[in-house]
Length: 122
Picture 1: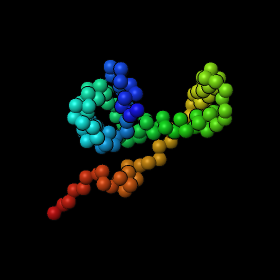
Picture 2: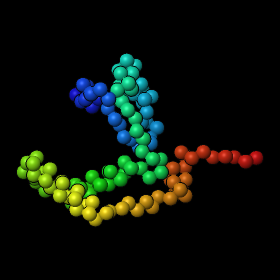
Picture 3: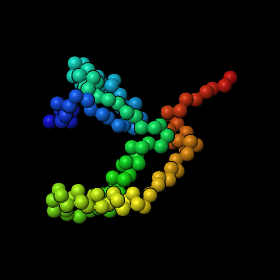
Picture 4: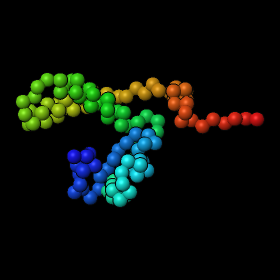
């Protein structure tokens, strides 16, 4: 089953994505037949994360920490999983963990040079 068939009955699917050029309705038209692409475009609600300091990156980091601190062992059943994750969330929230963004605009202009426009003065 293709991933776009997983939620065929859903009226609307909300997508939260980082700001890559491939994350657009146009990408669906490149990958699918026009009728299917149009059907999906009408079903999808697009939400981009902020351009500088992606909230999606924060979520990915938290999921990684969850996996290492809480899910790195066998959990016997779904109920136990819910209890373990809830306890981990309470502990993590009580710690008031903050994100230390160290990627500066200068770093971005070097690393992502192809994304920044250049102005040639004559």
